[in-house]
Length: 200
Image 1 (cartoon, helix red, strand yellow):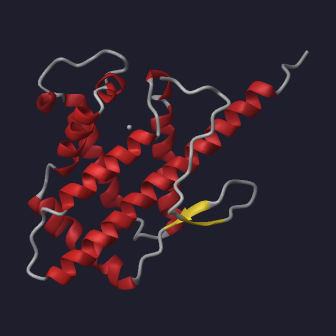
Image 2: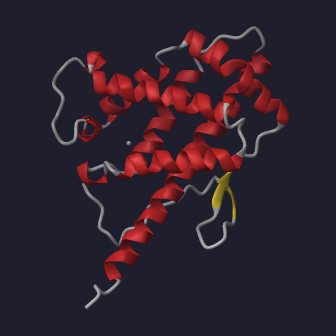
Image 3: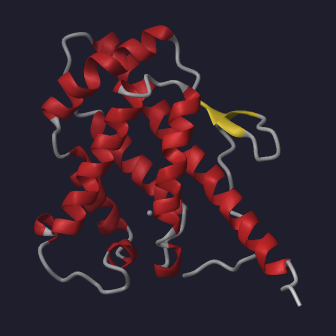
């Protein structure tokens, strides 16, 4: 964010709030106050993206630097030797990250059900990279780097900045926890399919 065995179940974050879902794993919940939601709406585009338009690109470069294996995964096991800042596939991926978080805030309005549905689609995309060595713990690496960069933002109000950073960190944690849950469900489906006898 080696190949995992089909019997392995990805660990889930111990810090997430969750609610039970019929017939499935508990689903993470994003428990933001209305004030915190307002700060995300106010500052994601106007402050974060305005001041740090390349935040998701720099995040991915930091992740690759910390774990070069990610380079191979993104390139589908063909290590990219070019200037990573000019890598079209990486640029497209980072733009998609920005648009994804933007949609959670301004389209899904930070409501759990539509966000979980959107994240489930993202999980299917990530699942396709499992065969190239993708491991969900790479998502934690992403979260750590993107959260760290947000502290460089400048705002007139220190209190408002602290509230925004807290809300963004909670949103990033929710994204990662929801992806973990989706990966767990995918693993269980694979195990179930593997253990089901083929029809005679």
